Length: 539
Image 1 (tube, one colour):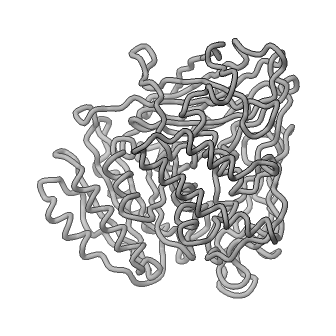
Image 2 (image 1 turned 180 degrees about the horizontal axis):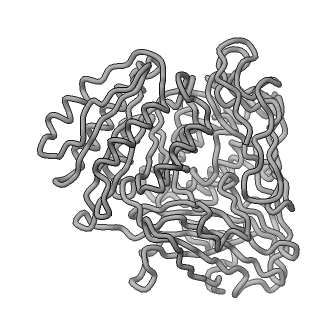
């Protein structure tokens, strides 16, 4: 696999932007097609040649098993935004697939939400997020849906299926595949041994970075319990162990150590990761959780800064049983690709924090899911009946694609689900007349935490799950359709060329009950994003 361009600071020096850097990252390991990066996607660039080059091209991947090809929205001028020096990767847009030629769709689950939170911040600041930053699955998975809890016979995960005619394109349907993880009670949660790896480099000085990260950490510590421990490691030009693994009986000492953190210097991320894992290994045992939590803007510029070198370090420690959460902060030089892929390789979660409310959601309201994995290497394979389904496309999950032949290969890495986590995926379908019972069969494979072999369950689509009209569909399916529609429009998906932002807003409004704060916030966000999208269309 080829190396990424180094982080540049001068004109034309950034990553894979404006024809600089190195093209060709090799294959993605999921099919026969290789990957090629065109000019216009810069991962680490800063300066006039860095950031996300506007309208300079796109990235394309060889398709699943060499058959499909990613689609891309046409190059469009973006409204002014602070993307210079930020790092995003374009994974393309899934195409329609003819069911008679390929009836299987296979992907790893994803519970990350960072893309939605980052996009929210951009819109609230009056700019559109770069389309490469919009991952549809992370928009969908940010919101809560009323999936039923797993029954005792289901194990830790339950699958929910429903479908309805599409509100966007006549003659098409939307199929929702939902997974609900079992919620562990406070008493069921294993003791947690956490190592905070905090970026204290000069780029973290602003109020929305290190000061906000410190408040988030204090909140997390206050929600831990007896038997949990915290270690604290920092990195800037060098790395430092601020606090060895320390129990909650010394909570005041932990708070003091967090409060005394200050920013300054360059960023030796790789060395910090090494030291953090050394601390995590001290408390590793089979009866507890051991997790590294990185708080950073992802901007690595000293030492082993190669994207692939850092990812290799993470993969080695995952096999030992230490998981990883990444929490992103800041704008202007934020490295979304780095932070998202660190979490992917670390069998953990990726979040972006733009406010204290966002921190509370991660470290207080959803603490169990943030900390404890209940199912590992979770894969979904949807088999469509070609007698009932003419064509289909999976909306989102482009960077979670798995070759169909690897579905039962338990050596292939997939996604993790934490306590109470949900996973939502939407398919756009073209059905044949008489479609209904058994139009799709969903198979799910998952391992127990630290398990070696996976178990598999199959779920057939029942006739009662197909609504005759969109209005008759559940409020959750309708709201998920609005979230998906907004994400498709924000990333300028070619499939959404004729979709209406006003229609998305009306669907969301009709599916938002009074008092549902997160859905009401989404409605407000749509209002702010609408004129921004109009300004792009007018150019």
